[in-house]
Amino acid sequence: MILPSVLKAARSRLRNIVLATGLLCLFQFSWAQQAQVSGTVRDPSDAAIVGASVELVNVATQERWDLLTNGQGRYVAPSLPSGEFRITARAKSFETRVLEGVRVEVAAKLTIDLTMQIGTEAQSVTVEAGQVQLNTVDASLSTVVDRGFVSNIPLNGRSFQSLLTLIPGVNAIPSGGSGTNGQFSVNGMRAESNYFLVDGVSANTGVNTASPGRGAGYSGSLPAGTALGTTQSLASMDAVEEFRGVTSTYSAEYGRVPGGQFSFTTRSGTNEIHGSLYEYFRNDALDANSFFDNRNGVSQPKMRQNNFGGTVGAPVWAPGLYNGKDRTFFFFSYEALRLRSPQESRITSVPTAALRNEIAPPELRQVLSAFPLPSPGYAEESGHTAPFVASYSQPSSIDSSSLRLDHAFTDAFRVFGRYAYVPSSTSSR
Image (cartoon, rainbow, N blue to C red):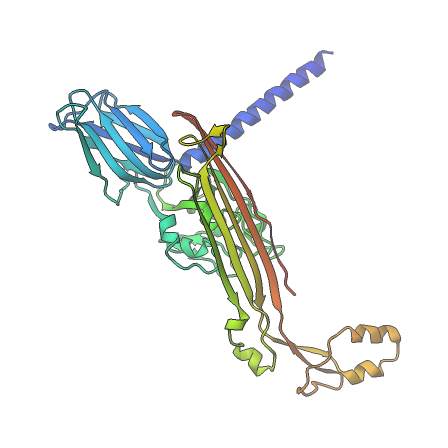
C-alpha cells in the first residue's frame, strides 16, 4: 500500500514542476514583449533627487504605474504595454514636472530623464515629449511598424508580408525555397531561424502544406499561417496595435533562435468607444480578359475578391451591474476573405470523339467519355487526341475572429486574455 501513495505523490510533484516550468516560460516570452521606461530625476544643479514620486499613466485607459526614485535618483518601469503615456514627477520643494505625449512602443527600452525646478508642488510645468524616442539602453537593431502607418498605406490582401519586408535585412523567400510560401529570410538565415511572438506567446506553431513532404513547414518552427500562406492566423491587420522586428544584437531575453525576432502586440479597448467597418473588393466586371486567354479563345474566368470586416473596442459596461471605465476593456475584431482567383488557361490533350466511338468495350468507353470534349478550332494532335483549352477560378476563404479582454484588479496587478479563431481553406485542381 506504500507504493501507490509514493507514485501518487511523485506524479503530483511532477505535475507541479511542469506547471511551474510552463508558467516560467510564458513569463519569459511575455517579458520580452513588454516595454521599459527608465531615467533619472535631477534638480537644476544636476544632482539626483532621492525619493521623488514618478507616475506613469496610460492616456487611453488611465492605468497608472506609481514609482519612487532610489538613492541615485533612478526610476524604472519595467513592464509597460505599448501606447501613449503621461509621466508626472513630484518631490517636496520642487515644481511638479509633467511630460505629455510619451510614445512607448512594443518591446521598447526608453531612457527619459526629468529635471525639476525649485518651487512648490502646487506649481506645475508641462512639456510635450518629442515624437522620436531613441533606445539608449542596449545596442539592438529593430524597426517598429505601428497602426498609424498601416492604416495609411494600401495593402493588397491585408497581410503582414508587405510590411515585414520594409525592415532592413528582411527578404521574402521565393516560392519553393528552403522555407514555404510567405516566409522570410533575415540577414540571409533560413525561415525557420525566425521567432514570432503575439502578446508574448510563441506563434511558431505553423504547418504549411503548400509543399507536401518537404520544406520547413512540417517542423513546427514557422509562424502560424493560413491556407493561403498569409498572416491572419497570427493576428488580423486591424487587431494589431504595432509590431517590432529585431534583426541583430538583441539581448538574451529573446534567445531560442538566431534569426529575426518579431513581436506583435494586439489592440485593447479604451475608455472611448471606437470601431470600424470596411470592405475591399475586386471583380472581373471591372477587368479585361488576359492576353493568353484571349489568344486561346477562352472567355474570362471569374475573379471575385471580397475582403471585409470590422472592429469594436470599449470599456465593459452592463447597465446597473458593472461599469468598467478605467478598469475593464474589450476589443473584438473580425476579418473575412472570399476569393475566387482566376488561373491562366492551359492546353491539355483529351481523347478525340472518333476514338470514343471506336472503343468497343463499354467500360473503357465510359472512362474516355469522362474526359471533356476537344475545344473547337484546334487540329488533332494525332489520330487519337486533340487539344482541350480551359481555365478555372480557384476558391479560397479566411475567417479571422479575435476577442481580447483586459482587466486591472489594482494598479499593480493587471491581466488580459485573448481568444482567436481563424479557419481558412483553399481548393486547387
